[in-house]
Image (tube, rainbow, N blue to C red; front, side):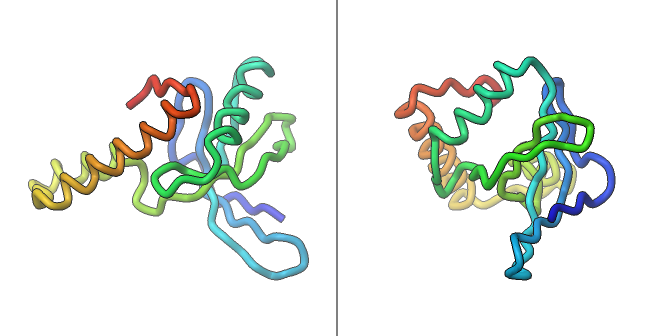
Amino acid sequence: TLEVEGGPIAAGAFKSVFRAEWRRGGSGFTTTVALLKLRGALGEIAREIEVFVKLGRHPHLATLMGVTTHPDGSTCMLVEFAPRGSLHEVLCQQVESNSVPSEAVRITVALQICEAMTQLVEHGVVHRDL
């Protein structure tokens, strides 16, 4: 079962993101996921899902955990939940609090971005929003 917690935590032109609790089968195991409610033509939605499947698991990319249909008929993807939000949100919070990450943290983040982008390039995926 899937329980959505409140309204969207983020929204863009093609999707809205919700925090949800996903209880898998009869195991009682529950995990927090990001539910991406997709909007657009069916072909675009299929391509978005295909990209996640093609990329597979990578330590610096959100993992696709499942696909479902919203009661209103929209296609939804379940992906790993990032409790601190997107990298953009984390960096903005740093600026707003006048906090500067150490050089070691900045280098680690830069390396992780490079590793993630390398995964995309190796699978022929162009990221248009970095």
